[in-house]
Image (cartoon, rainbow, N blue to C red):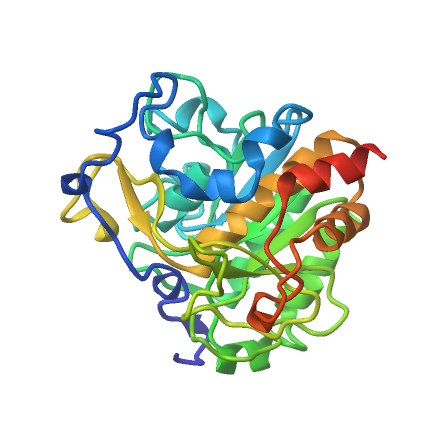
Amino acid sequence: MRTTARTRAALVAGCLLLAGAATGCGDDNDDKADPMRGQQWALDALELPAAWQQAKGDDTVIAVVDSGVDLGHPDLEDRLVDGYDFVDGDKRPEDGFGHGTHVAGIAAADTDNGKGIAGGAPGAKIMPVRVMGDDGSGSNANITKGIIWAADHGADVINLSLGEGPLMSNLLQGGILNRAIQHAHDKGAVVVAAAGNDGAATQPYKVGTPVLVVGASDQKGRPADFSNFGAQNAVSAPGVQILSTLPTYTVELTKKNDSGYGKLDGTSMAAPHVAAVAALLHQQGKDPDAIMKTIRDTTKDPGSQKRLGLGVVDAKAAVDAADD
């Protein structure tokens, strides 16, 4: 990974696989509410449907600091609040790459609307903050501005699916992103960040920075081979073959798929699942420190799979603990 002021492919690192509509997304699912729900194995692995009986993330805003969002996507448009575009310097953070749209759908796609997929936090809203350009690259300065802007404009949870590599992580340990994350925490927002996809042991943020780092697990609950590991108090969540929304127009990630949906691999996909769980706990009245502690304390025992960190997140256990 390049270590210049512009961090090339910070998002590309989070997108390892794209599958188009030709795979038959949703064709074999009888669930009429969300036709593709049957392919969202991650929701069940995280016990999210059971958790929804207690909380769905109502009155919670999840900021997706990323490449923007398809503002007209039928599974997202009714979930959006105002955001900002730090690439073009305007108030229309339209996704020109595809990554942010995928992340947003995982976190809070419209649910029970007869279209597409279900979101991890069906009651939450999405705040799109564009900090990455059409090629999936961006500057540390814009990422920092995006985090601060989201926190200052009412975000309760901030998702950073930026896929930084280990060399860049070393540069960031004492850098401006840590200060931006601290600012967000002090404003009352939980910051959830992808661990990265280099299969390496790394501490992506300065020890003590209030951020919940998320690695990726597969369908069998094992650590994904590409997932970074070793961050302080990191957790894991599904990040392999994750179906979500994609732009309904042509961008880098939709050149061979115009269905509006597709599957990606990466810790970038794992992080918004955890952001969704954080949204459920926010609805239950928990502050950022309590949310992070509850998620960490209720993970499933990793056993011998040390690369899972504290373990795979369990949404039902987390909301149950929050009620105690």
